[in-house]
Amino acid sequence: MIRGHDVVIQAGGDDEQPVPVVNWRGLVTYQEAASVELRVAVLPQGKDPDDVIRADAESWRTLIADAEPVLDYRLDAAAATVDLENPRGRSELVREFLPLLGAVTDPVVRAHYLQRLSRLSQTGEEELAAVLARPQRAARSPRAPQLAAKGDAGEEFTLSLLLQYDSLREDGLKVPETLFWDAQARQILVLWKELAQTNAVKSALPPELDAYFERLILRRLPISDAKEASEAFADCLRKLETRRLRAEKQAMASQIADLQEQVGASGLLDTAEQQIIERDTEIGKEIHRHGRSDDGAKTVETSVNGN
Image 1 (tube, helix red, strand yellow):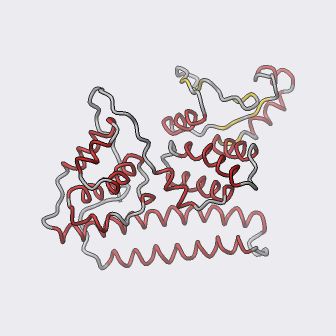
Image 2: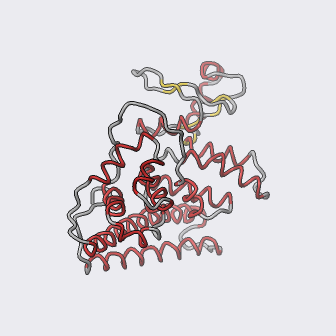
Image 3: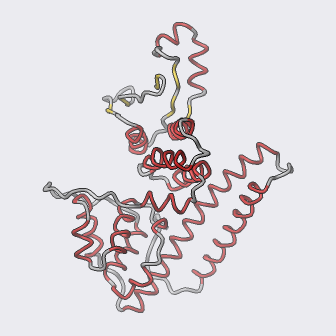
């Protein structure tokens, strides 16, 4: 529950211990970890829930019914506090909201909010995604060894190929970081591009990624030579790109549905709306082309999101 614009300090279920939440990223992180959807109901200034319920139960029900998803609320509130006509204001909006998406694990949800932020800030989605993918360097400090967190199987296989086969470096440098949805995989890819040597990448990693990195470089691959490695790498990229296109198409479908609600399926579309529909059609064709490429390609046992 939000009083004015203050963030709640605790969150938890009826039968659970409260979980401290001290900022907006904390709320988003909690939402992802608990697999719940948090919504924000704005209370009248100086009132708590009991006050509102006692004064007018119907107002309370309306407040709850109108509660917004936490990311929608935060984006709208942040946009309302800056001058979107001014580049500095749009830059401030990006600095304020973009870090919250780093805690979002669902790629479709992340793509949706990147699109919204892109429109408000007049900044390309690719640029925003690239900023989001940049690793946050942290000072190394002694700590207990950690188990490697489970990542995306297809992304891990692709990284293992890059780390174990120097012959793939030229092709690997062209891979956009936005194809990798797992934050730890993106961080390693960015460092691998910056640093030519595997040992240098390992030294630059924060300690919490040490175990994950070791798993990548020690992974036994069903590859016998550089030629097979190149074919496997191309196959991995096709699968990752197809996954990205499908997520974008799903997000586009949501936008088109919203547009149809606003103007009607046969209503007049302006240029921006036409561009959305045209882009949706283009994505469908790209997915089809990738599917045909897979049919004629020699594939190695790889997977993306278990597929």
